[in-house]
Image (tube, rainbow over all chains, first blue to last red; front, side):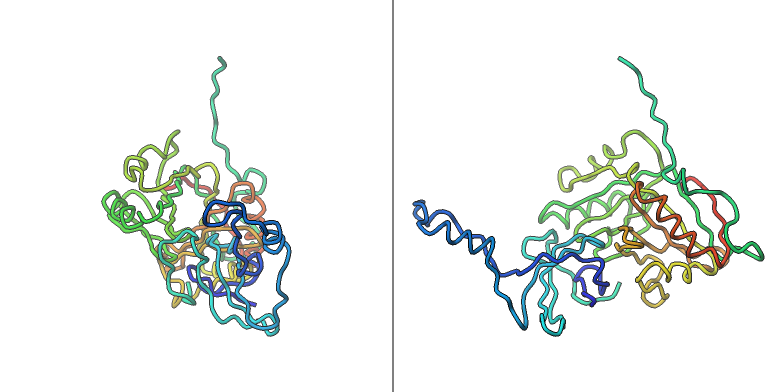
Length: 104
Length: 209
């Protein structure tokens, strides 16, 4: 499997490290009015431990540690390993990502 | 208080053996050179200030830092892409404080980190250098995709390296420079020497000029 890093170009899998599902969002322990969220424990249990077992397209976080050390969001089909999109993870380093898939 | 006198040592003090390695007949196909006496500083633009950093670099060295993997040779320094909004400044020297002059240039626009003693600089050239590198790197080094000035942050033998192509040698063979963490330098030198042995290797040392 190869991943087209939006900064470096297409690279072999060995340069990347897999984190997992990009979907989980960190819940807040507090409601908008500052009061404690009554179901915060359940929300955090879900966020930390529970994952969907997706068969098909999934957004994932990958780390290009063997290259530019950027965090990436990769849309991958978990049954075929086909990669449909690669982009910089939100908030990762660059002000603007370079063009995806360009060779270096 | 005791006075210390720090003496710079080559990170290749175990692996480096000067002279001919591998194939002994004919011209050496690969020249491996350890480059010493360089200042290397990592520059990371602070969020939203990448344009200011580029402007400051242009003013200081006459070239813009590469926005994509590449190496720009400026007046007094080479700027090597290492990742989005970050680059190395490589220059001649072995002074005790390579950061201060850059801190004046980038005045709060970028975070700076001295890597002079943290990396080993290896230069590879020769008629068969590409064949040797092809064995250990997955980067396509063909002229069409990796011309003079191209660079890559990649892994060779599971070791992170910064690789870039300098101007061709006088005899027309390509010249690559490679930065590797000092603690991995001995190991990587062995790997490269093994890969190049069948073409004949000439190992030398020289200060950066």
